[in-house]
Image (cartoon, rainbow, N blue to C red):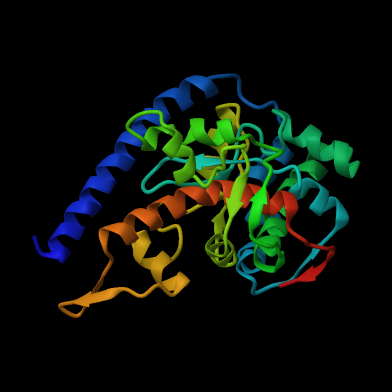
Length: 288
């Protein structure tokens, strides 16, 4: 079978697996989240659902076109961040909408660290963590190695990613970057990808829907094109990582082994982001 055709079949198989995983996750996710709407003051809710009205330079801050002053309070909140997984499309990491700082009441958690008294002030600071996180991912530093997971556990990652595997197996944890003693193995590849990651804030309708569903609006990677403009995300990853890729008929074609390795690397970004925000060296300052 020609490699290009085999690769197309592999893409279709992978897509079917994503759809199955998304369906399996979304069924349990909806049941788990079925609860009362967040009781948030109208002005605070407006900031959370339409932050661009409060921060007109929002997109420039996140993209690095505009500077943002990161404070010690921002960093203290970054250390509390908890990541989860968006199951739509290809799937991608996101800040956990249920427990963004490890507790159901995100605004109370913010106030406990920053001392902000009003919901409006705390809502503003929640948006500011989105800005601070974008600067941390771009400018923070961390050496490769095995790191303990504090805000989530290895079992949490295994469970949230279980829909991508046909059955429960110890090899699943290895594919997710987890070590036998429950740590995450951070590599140079993870760190290279972290530097270029872009997170989006949910649309106004999506953010309002989260509040209505008892969740918090929070940053999410694009699950359709998580690394760049190609819908075939492994090609983006290969280009970013500088992998040697064979050319057939004028097109670059990944081998099956490369596709599998990049697929696993993509799944591992959940754990990679978690240990990065928990451990990366990052100091207060003004960053672009």
